[in-house]
Image 1 (cartoon, helix red, strand yellow):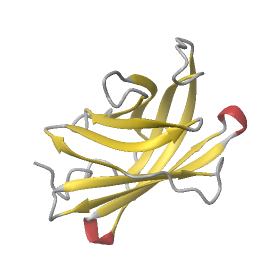
Image 2 (cartoon, rainbow, N blue to C red):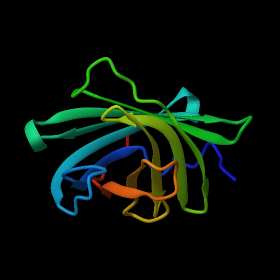
Image 3 (cartoon, one colour):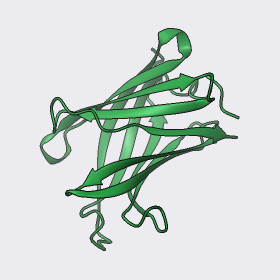
Length: 158
């Protein structure tokens, strides 16, 4: 069952190795790889956290995630915004952890059509946690993983 401490592994500075499909929901098997950094910290007295993601890849962009724990539902909500779409906050994903894996789902749109989005956080009790994003355009019957981030501590907690 999820706890407010689920993301206690997260605050600090991280090096991020990214693998992202060049084309999403189009049958592509061509991946691009690039580096980034992320800096995360607790907010709201430990019932939330935020991080800032930065990369120079593809012209560069900055993204931010916000995560909030609801003690009444024992679920997390995760939100994303980035500099490629200023003023837009993506719809939240909701979910929880079991062991060192967290699974989160939500509804969104991609290229004008409705999709389901899934985030999986895994290996959070190891020095190299992983985040994966997948899309489904058939209501969750099948999933296409389209972005994987592997994190390595840059050694400084915030």
